[in-house]
Image 1: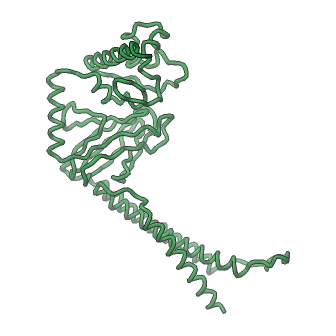
Image 2: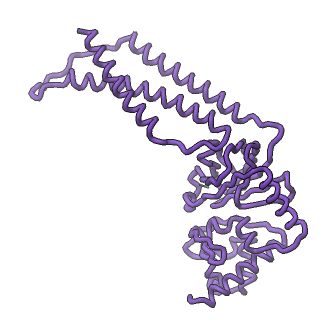
Image 3: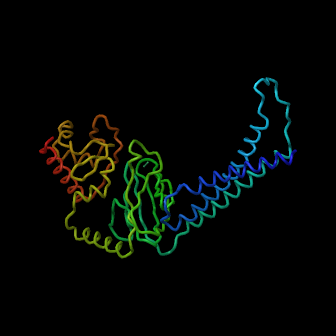
Length: 339
Ligand code: CUA
């Protein structure tokens, strides 16, 4: 009788386990791996999933069996028999979770420690997060900066990350590595890309109205392509040649919040920059002066209907000049257009 019950519970549990395992395995829950750190993270993920499948199957097996076997008849209004605790069972269902949780802690600690070990040969990248954009600086390459994160394939990148306003979180699903970016401290992340291609950084911490739009591109390229790009950019900057307002706009991530036709940006967290002449009128200032002030000291004039979340931008003079020119030129064109 008792053996029969146990056997039934086991059969139901195995059935449930088979179904849930199929759901876990045959639905592609995770994007393809694109970093060498992803192995460790995925191992922890599947380790925990396997434990969950086991626990779920046991609980479901007992519940389903009990639900069928001990169902009350429709006309049965009597109380069930009084049941007292069972010391043996209680020890068992305390001990098993304790062992499982300890195992998860050990496996996770090993994975984190391995993914935190930095090879001597690595690329340094400084990440600046602010509502609602990411910027990247490459201290190994002088003044090199960009709004797209470019990484050479097969080489560890050491990201040191700072936030200018609130907490953000750096996450590229294909790399698996994820870490908060916190104002007032520098957090670290190590990523070793294993596949060339384009990926997307997703901010993974609710950071304000534009959080969902805080997406930016990562390009993983061959080392030679990376070097060419880095050298090209460094030369451009050293020659002091043309500082392009459009490049500064992209580099500083202005398009993360503002719509601006000439730059092709369509974000709506901040006032649309195609209307700059109108905004300047309302602020009662000449256009160029208004734009300059709004970049350097955004608090000076805040457009109605927009929370002022823009941090002051401290740019070298020539970059500021170029950006102001780009914005006022674009604004004039927009103003002369069909609008
Ligand atoms: Cu930044 Cu969410």
